[in-house]
Image 1: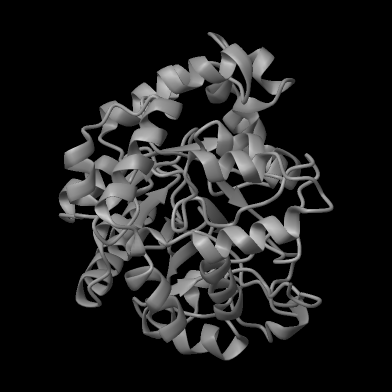
Image 2 (image 1 turned 180 degrees about the vertical axis):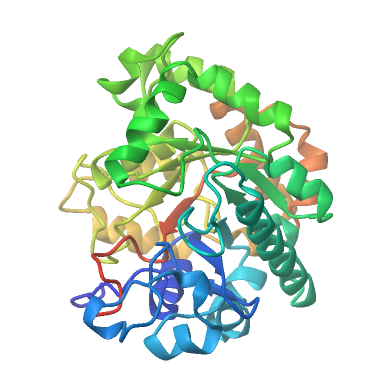
Amino acid sequence: MPGKWEQAPENTLESLRHGIVQADGIELDIRLTSDNELIVHHDSVVSIPKENLDDRSKWVENWSLDELKNEGFCSLDDILNDSIIRKQWIEKGKMVCLEFKRPHLLSPSGRGIFSKSRQISNLSAAMKIAELKLKQEEIPNQNSVFYSFYKGMNKIIEKESITRNWAELMPSVPTIGTRTMKRMYAYPQYFITPFSRLVKKHRNSGSSMVPCAMEYFSPIYSRALFGRMVGLQGKRREYLSRCQKGTPTYVWPTKPELEHKVLSAGLTALSDHLDPNLTWLPSDKARWFNPATMPLDESQNFILDNATKDQHLSIIKQLKLETPTWNECDKQRKIELIKYWRKKWNWQIDIDDTIAKSTDSPPWESVRLIGHRGSGKTSRPVIK
């Protein structure tokens, strides 16, 4: 097993490399720079120590690409040109989720309390640029998804002729305010949107997937919802599958103690915990980092699920030796895997059609483990 592991700062090239090699894919955040380039950065303010600003603007969108790269942040081009990430993304069928960030309402690029035209223009431009870059680099549509906390995503998709898979993050949250204020703004929308309605809203909008907050599966928060509750086990899990019908559902943030239940329920888990030494989960289950890109069949899953802590490392080692990646699977194994998943999670799909669309990448509906912001969220400032 690996030696001591130190987590790299979120959204850095090192973090993204580790995440995409270790898991089934990564999630990252995209912003538009002052010179119309794409930088990987989550916060609206430049995440460096305040004393290092040197009287420069604190807003990311006011900085050029070179200025941000000089501080240690990476660009979308850096990711697309990185041999390690490209191999995983294109050849290994790994997923990359790109979350597009709107500029803050008080920043010059997003200013307008009563009109969000600048924010929309910024978001639209960023997505169009990303679409062209991914197309130029021949990134398979099957291996990427665009999403954002913006209610009019479908209009941008149509206007800019975006061909990528996409989704609208719900409930919509403002760019202004503290984390607590944003959550308070979102909760009323959350309370009146049970999981069944959330799925329907995404399907009706044309979304390719359902990004979903972990609160939907929390025994505390879910009780406050109007409508029937879903869950990760028992009858509530069965109801979850009936609502999903195979619609990919990405859940964040998935903590290690719930990871096994989330994946077993047919949900993709976005994790902040990709330590390669974390092979035994707090739920007393052995961990498998690649449920989509190195998928276990029904009998192998049974062996892994019934492993003890003392024997789990040897079982994981043996399974890695005998399990082909999705791209290495022959057609018969792929058919067996899809039949297993369809029955287990109520996928409403045609097997032959799914096989035809999944030659080089796992099926779109596949349950994945995704590295949040690469290897996971880290403290502020990101660049010390």
